[in-house]
Amino acid sequence: MLGRWKRILVGFLLTLTVLLGGTVAYPFIVGDGKPVLDATVRSTMPKKTFVALSDGITSYEWAGPASGQPVVLVHGITSPSFLWDYQFDVLAQAGFHVLRYDLYGRGFSDRPAVRYTDDLYDRQLLELLDALQVTKPVHLVGHSMGGAISVKFTDRHPERVARLALLAPAGFPVEDIPLKYRLLKAPLIGDWFLRMFGEKALKSGLKWQVRSDPKKSAQFQEDYLEQLNYAGYTQALLSTLRHTPLLTLQPVYERVGTQSRPILLLWGTKDKTVPYAHHLLAQKALPSVQFHSLENEGHIFHYEHPEKINPLLLTFLRGSSNEEGDTSL
Image 1 (cartoon, rainbow, N blue to C red):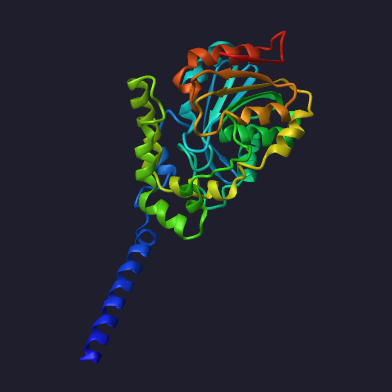
Image 2 (image 1 turned 90 degrees about the horizontal axis):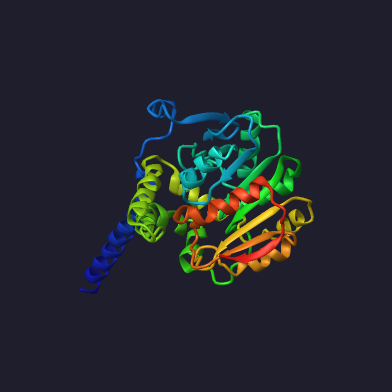
């Protein structure tokens, strides 16, 4: 009798092991089943513009007179360049030659099978400017992770940047990192979780990104979800979280702060993504920065309330008599 129960227990454990193993292996074996962004897919996008760089194809867009001062818009970690929709044409109509592009892994740019590091993003921007023959120093505008990329680019290539505008930029330490982000960085566990639940989690969080206008929220979700139609987005996001330093850039900010260059800093007081309190660290690292505190604004304030942000950007990018200051709006 004992031998029989032992055989039953062993069989049960073997079955459980196989089931668990299959559950863990399933997302790695099956993949996401989505089409790859390739030449065939891109041929169906006549309104998009692409350029081949060393790490892959980059999707970009120009607006404004070619003779105007070049302004480059760098988006953040999750949303691609559509997030600049409410600045892109406004800056172009003001006479600037405005460039926006999708970072690798986002939007309609390639999702190369590489580590998504700060070196990758720096190289992408440098090669993009060279490929488009932008030799004049640019005005660089970065939001969130795009702010961190912009600061790193300015540190490495100071001769390529005339003015620097930072919108809630990443780069400073966060004391209480949520458990879900710590789990994502864990080998295998993070990969499995993202493949199984990552896209669902991303979609469920979209409705909270834009709250001020239901129509604008719906448009934001539609534009965001378009990039999820193609393979590689969530993998690129995970690799970025693991390999791009977004919490340890204070020394880089400090080096940029010693350079002679006008800098603008905008931050929403209700930002739950990149803490508003970080503006104090940014101001300390960038002593001559012109800072504007945006009352009751969240993380993507330039998308939600461009009517507040665009005048500040235009004044700064055109050059003003007062390049320093600290104001609340």
